[in-house]
Each structure stands twice: as C-alpha cells, then as structure tokens.
Amino acid sequence: MSDIVLRVEDVWKSFGDLQVLRGISFDVAESEVKVIFGPSGSGKSTLLRCINYLDPPDKGEIYLRGKRLGDPDTDINKIRSRIGFVFQHFNLFAHLKAIDNVAIGPEKVLGLSKEEARERAMRALKHVKMDKWADHYPAQLSGGQQQRVGIARALAMETDVILFDEPTSALDPELIGEVLQTMLDIAKEGTTMVVVTHEMGFARSVADEMIFIDGGVIVERGTPHHFFTSPESERVQQFLHKLDELYGQTRDERRTIAERDQE
Ligand SMILES: Nc1ncnc2c1ncn2[C@@H]1O[C@H](COP(=O)(O)OP(=O)(O)OP(=O)(O)O)[C@@H](O)[C@H]1O
Ligand SMILES: [Mg+2]
Image (cartoon, rainbow, N blue to C red; front, side, top):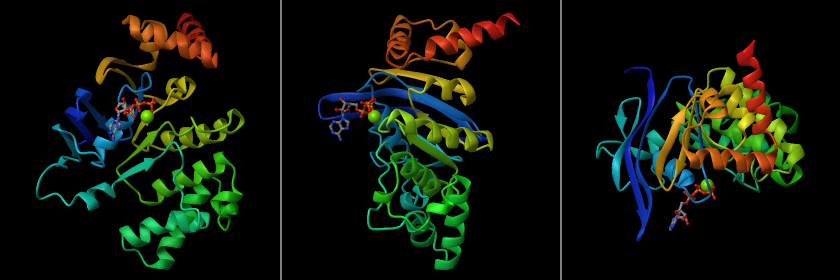
C-alpha cells in the first residue's frame, strides 16, 4: 500500500546465544504514531536499531516506502538519512553549538550549502522553540533543551519517519513535560513516528497504535483505548499496574477514558 511508510517484517535478532527479537512485524502508515513499550531488556532499543540497520536483522526485512533496506542495491547510508533517530541520551556533539548540531546533517549528509543548512536548522530550532538558544553549546542547555535540539536535528533532515528511543527517560521529572509537548506538537502536525516510551499520557493523546513487546515478541497490540480499558494479557496488565505504581498516571488515564466512555 502506498501510504505505508515503514514495514517491519518478521524481524529476528540475536547477540550470541541471546535471542532478543523473535519475529516482530508491523507497518507504520503516513502520519501514524506508533508507541512501543515493554519491560527492560525486552528488545525495544534493538528493534529500533534493526529498523535503521545500525544492527541489521538476522532474519526478516525492513522496508522504507517499499524499498527493502537489505537489498544489495540499497545505499544504506542514503536510506538511513531518511530515518530520524532521537536518543535517550541526546547524543549531541559537545563541541558544536545547538545550531551546528542541527545543521551538520543537512550539510554533510544531504549536501546542502552551509547557508541553506543553517537556514533549515534555524527553522527546525524555531519549531521546537529553541531558536533563542541557537548559539549555546549543549553543556549550557538543560536536559530538556538538549533533547529538543535532538528533535530539531531529526526534523531538519526532513526524514520519512522519526524513531524515538525513550526520549524522556533520562530527564529530571520537571523537564519531561517540555519534551513531551514538543513531541505532541510534531505528532499532531503529521510527523510519522515510532516512539519507545513509557509515558502513557503521551500514548493516550497521540498514539494510533500501541505495541507491547516482551521477550522479543509482540504480546499485545491495539489502540490506547484498548490498553487502558481492557488489556487482555496478564503480562500487560501487570506491566501497566507497575507503571501505575511508578508514575501514578495510568490509573488516571484509564479513569479519564472510562469516564469519557460514559458520556
Ligand atoms: N550489542 C549487544 N550485544 C549483546 N547484547 C545486547 C546488545 N544490545 C542489546 N543486547 C541485549 O539484548 C537485550 C535487549 O536489549 P534492548 O536494549 O533492546 O532492550 P530494551 O527493551 O531497549 O531495554 P531498556 O528498556 O532497558 O532500554 C538485553 O538483554 C541486552 O543486554
Ligand atoms: Mg532500550
């Protein structure tokens, strides 16, 4: 189908004897937001790294707009430049100002002129409300601001999809909100996103589908409404309960949805 941006097809991955992914499949459509969640060690980061071929799958295929990444004819660096990645620990270049962190991709990877790249970077920084900080170095920015620069860096590449690997989990609680707001904004603007996160409020607001992974397999998938009102598997129920205890938010989400259902 033409509106499928990303296809993940029966992906398997192991490290030595450790089987981490055991047959993961899903499609991501244009403008779709897919939320992936599950216990630590379940293979979420590995899955994202397989999707952009940082760690090629042992078996299975990844397609970006119908182009098979594993095809010998595929220029993997070129196709990877169409897949954005936002990391848990920001991964900004410490010696570059915010604007240069954002401009370096468009200039070095996409081949834009220095001027064009800086213009594009400035637009992306404005988008995440960081334009006033363009000339600051990462060390001069809060974690939340650094992560917004990380998001601007992905936006400036104008990729087909952006992958997020727990983008708020390294942040102090008071900084999480500004990053989630930025992610909500770009999701609502139609950015195609695959987001590994345990922020259930974010999932409820914008996820088209949630996928629960445990032991390298998809245990359950469905809409936020499904997960917050009638999750089927015991593992999912236990996990949501644990999140609930940790963050105290999923209970509120469920109540909100249950109340809304009664209206
Ligand atoms: N490069 C690697 N070499 C060996 N083992 C690895 C490698 N990368 C990941 N693993 C192992 O694969 C398993 C899945 O790791 P992964 O990082 O994908 O989990 P995760 O779901 O992202 O966990 P978390 O929620 O803690 O981030 C873990 O047992 C991890 O130790
Ligand atoms: Mg991880």
